[in-house]
Length: 375
Ligand SMILES: CC(C)(COP(=O)(O)OP(=O)(O)OC[C@H]1O[C@@H](n2cnc3c(N)ncnc32)[C@H](O)[C@@H]1OP(=O)(O)O)[C@@H](O)C(=O)NCCC(=O)NCCS
Image 1 (tube, helix red, strand yellow):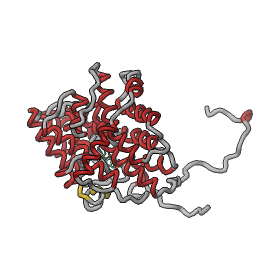
Image 2 (cartoon, helix red, strand yellow; image 1 turned 30 degrees about the horizontal axis):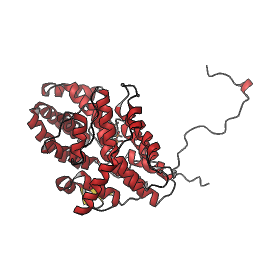
Image 3 (tube, helix red, strand yellow; image 1 turned 45 degrees about the vertical axis):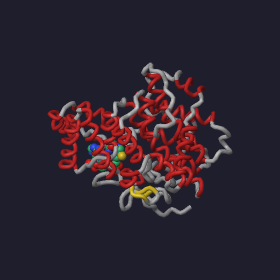
């Protein structure tokens, strides 16, 4: 084996760890060559999910077929819903989602023979049901059935809150799903690719990805953003809170990004929807607090918002409980994960990097009877 020193980049920062045709960050985020800004302007999440899973935007007829597939796929076996009701109520929503997605695999028809695209479509339909059912179980509310004529975005809001959203609310949710859908080799997507590279199955890869997304440095940040904003309380408190946060060397959640050092373009798109919803709900005070924090972070720390910054406020204005924020990220990102799982399977090579060893070598082995304890 070669002993030549190899370059090491902590956190794999800047390392090209594979090839993909699904999305690129270079020249502005694009999904399969389409600028995400354009998709967020004119497409629906269903069109984007079709693009990610099948590699092209659908025609009207293909979209209608795809929507019908998602409606049919949204059936969650009663056994899984009943099992979910036995999970203690204090358990975090992301943990419940991870467990129940894993459980779904046991009821997936012919898991070995079904194509990954079909499995992905099923998960895309089933995950909103799981998220909403768990929430309503926890709140002691009746679990609702999806309405076949509603979009994914509208159904998500209806299934959780029990109310059909207004067109503005539906579009705001739709745009957040489009923006969250895919983002190259982020930590959870890379996790899904690593699992897939061992020739494991799609559900295992998605379960692992949910575990990776849960962490507050990744998807879990959107929940922490709202908790920090609630801690601040009002615009008058924002400057003092920010000073304390810097003094205590805490992280400002929803700010900074491994690849976007001068701002995440997705955050600016979603901010417009935040303002619209905040005006509609008379919650402009929270927008003013957010403005002050944005200014202070930029001017004093050179930090810019990432997508989790506006999405936390957006979901809050949509009347959603903070524990649902990261599961909603899953409802969208599962489309990107599955696109990567499919791509990895088609061009597979086991992902198995090397580590730089920093431990001791050449120690003399002493039999147990001669070994002294550490103290
Ligand atoms: C996303 C994130 C993990 C990327 O980090 P990264 O590229 O690995 O950068 P590092 O964690 O090495 O941070 C580099 C420097 O910027 C600082 N920094 C980065 N993000 C920061 C934040 N949100 N708040 C405060 N300081 C931050 C770090 O403290 C570090 O400073 P130092 O060099 O003085 O120690 C980081 O920006 C972060 O923790 N953000 C908050 C969580 C979040 O919003 N996650 C969602 C990401 S989409």
